[in-house]
Image (tube, rainbow, N blue to C red):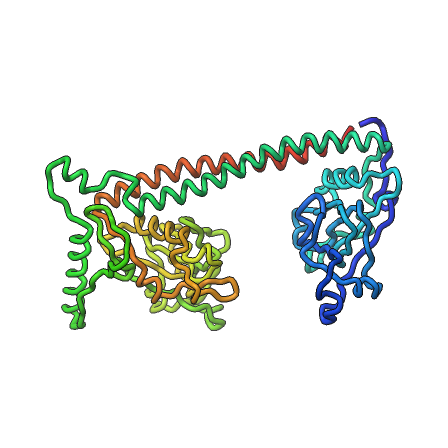
Length: 454
């Protein structure tokens, strides 16, 4: 960059604000064709459309004004300002809401140059121009207008923009490649889980037994022995019990030595305790887990809350290492998202937004986790009847009847070990991809910094 001048943003053209036409007046919105840009549209560098549109009637009312093509739009009020300062150049005439400001550059000022210069200084702008003590993150308009950027003649502005976009184009290609790798890794992990559940990941116990000339305990025998133990235990306590038989009609064929069962035949299911105001304080405050803490095969302890649990409630709802927690309510694609509690913190309970599965001896908890993860990815827990307002719910009754494949116990051990090995490799690759995506973002800022530092 050749030597230029430092110029305030307010001196680069005409500034204007926006408004929201009354939502109560359908004449302002129904059939609207005039783009109305709000912060939710400001996720791109160039505005070519908007989610919402207003009518010419709303425009004629005078509460909003048309912003000309080639103007630079800035988000000045939004939660996103806590970490990002969105800036975009509009490629068409638009209107804006009250959370945005628009700069229509005067002759001799390139809107793309201004946008890039502001993006390059976004961290400084958020530090120096942000309002403090507001409910929603905001930028002080006067401070923004007084913010200075370097300004050179129009020809050099165009050259700088062209070089930035050339570098960004190369970077975007690399980022697109990284995102493809990330998507492929996600499919790869899902394929590993699917193969594990279908008996295609490791040699079966039947194959091992045949080669070694020995007998083995099949999944059906394992299940039958467990059922007999449970029945004897119930009868010993004077409880009536009926034989439990897996419902195999219509299910796919399993490998030799495997058996179908229902979830309720393989473990104890329990919904957590309700969060009620009466438990918000008390003499026995204990940590508890909720949906926000349960991620796929990971318990997040960054935001653990506490409730009062009596000794009886604590005994009933306390978690034990090896318990699997499944999200009871979630978006359909994440319904039943499971994680295993491994004793990360002691004395922790769980709420009724989670379902606990405690495996009986015929199934390893780690294998059950693999099955539940596959079912979550495959949408096995979702049906039309359990979706309300884009949130799906997994009842105990529905989960208890879901079919579950039971391999011989030694085969379960081998499957768990192989899944752990393969997913560990995938996690390492994902971590490397994430690192490179962060480097790409940092490189974008470095390119902008170099372009406007001279």
